[in-house]
Length: 196
Image (cartoon, rainbow, N blue to C red; front, side, top):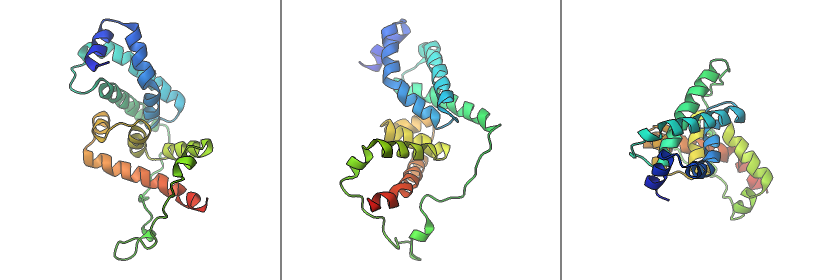
């Protein structure tokens, strides 16, 4: 169904349209909210608040972006605000860590030892339950901005433009955050996967 039809149905109070949108986006929204807040419970609460805001604000939706991008932007703003409030009472670990260990490069900037090639068996490895859980845990350990970009791009399949629109960041910033997040995850599992 097109965004125009869906928006029209939502504006008319069509409950089945709302259920359709919630079914389609709710799990992704909770995952995105978790990039900004401390727990699943808070992410779920932020997502519920977002749904209320969507229903209250649907008449102000102007169609300058897709409905999905508009909803996710509302969520990102609410989750970011909630995360900031939480950080006022939660200690923050600041890290100067780079995305790839500098010792892996020689003086000329080339790989001293290139990353090991992950075989074609990677799909089998990634589809195993325990590894998937550990990858999700690795994503949850990323800094907030990297976690948000990796979640939207790699778990929810949004395009780079959609991620930029949702998080209100530049294309260059999105690329850097995605690279750093993926690099941290890769570094965490690279040695382990090479041994298998």
